[in-house]
Image 1 (tube, rainbow, N blue to C red):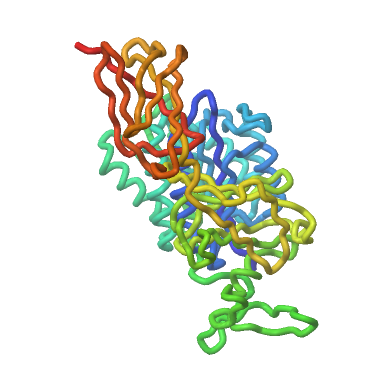
Image 2 (image 1 turned 120 degrees about the vertical axis):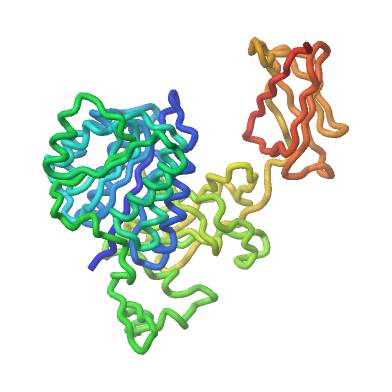
Length: 448
């Protein structure tokens, strides 16, 4: 019996950028990470989904996906995905509905985008058993909160129905105007006939008598493990020609459990554990429950959250990449205002079955603070503005640009920045992060 797959697909539009989409992805991933790590589910996450990505994942996990979640822009006729060049690409609902409706183990399609109600009828007619969708434009922050509450409840082994009800209760408690409901059968037909509706989220069923809403995350890992005498035993492992049944609870190699090194993969795929740590080695866990790691190989681009042990597990990697010759890339992401970076940022890694990868990280990018200064009312770029951090100062050029070089003895994660120009009020802000890839924008108010 294979693990149920929860597939999270996200996409953003650089022209209509959703500020909270990364937060939604991180919060859902963190809620489900323990179940993924312990083998109860397989979590698949795509941060910048293309049409090709979605179809490829369903080829890889055919009839294994239990929940398909989409986060991003949408309409009643399509999802707004990304193209290879970073632009937007429309995925028509009819084609996606055919794909999703063919999946025998699919329990739920969760469309967390604006006004997706018109896609519900197409999905239901193609055989999808349950859909969460919206009727109106949804606030980015509210959408993130609803999804976060739903998956936190699901992670506590609540059913789909219970998770929807708890997420609904949270939103109704915080936003008085939110309308949320459940529809099925004749109710669904009646709702579809309405010319308009103010329903924020709805849970729609193909058949009200279906028990699909009673599905929950398994309490045990259905990966061929068997229980004997209270010890969980892994499937037999071939080591130097001998077949051994190894107790996962007690057997380790060089400090890593065999579950970490060998678990999580089908006959055609494997898993990879990335150990994120500081220069002090594996025990130097400077990033726990903070940030994510991006794995890039071939045409795949996967992102998983760093857990409380400073580890990340990637599953569903084709076995062809574990030959010691293919090269993959690892990147840190989703660190918000934490300026950490790998100590060897341009490295490529060879995957070897049974071996994890150590990703050594450190605070970086503390030597520079830069940006532009504008008039807060007119938006005009301001020249000759004195920008300073303690005794280090620089003046903006005619394009409003400044750059402060921070000497080693003053380098720290956060700074207090000041900006002054004759005829304007003094601008000052504390806790400005020092990052070489973060452009500051300072807005000066004219004196009254």
